[in-house]
Image (tube, rainbow over all chains, first blue to last red):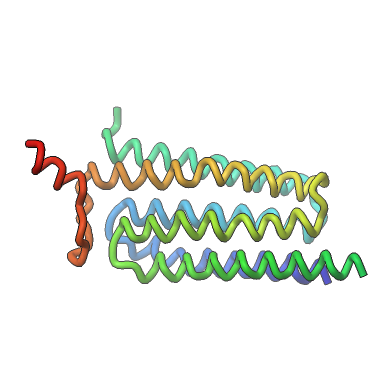
Length: 87
Length: 116
């Protein structure tokens, strides 16, 4: 029963990622694509964590932690690039 | 009985989180403007991630590998997500991304016009 809930949440998050890819493909400016990618990485980190709990693989949790932390680093770097240019 | 209660609570919390995330995705597609999209993204990520990961932490127990990582990711998102959204909105405003034509308030430009 608990396993069904875990895999259902994982699949739902992957469907949400599919919806967000529409905005990443359409977005007129760079900022729209960054917002879409930021939300995609967060939802996929949750999906990886729920899949780890579903499949009883402990080291997938660390992958979720890495995805969640370094996606925000990417957002900061992109916004710095938009604000100040390359230097 | 206790196991059933834990499962039900985890299912309800995860369902709430997934629904909020779904509204965030729909808002990100439907909103007309970069700044309104940033608003949709930041609020719904915060409000959608916390119940989902709390559901996982309740289902697996808070001190196991999964629940501990879930709580860690929740704390990290609470700190990092508003900061990232603010930095992105500020950078886009400075880069000159246009607002929606129905927007009614542009406070930095109004202050600049007042104080010269």
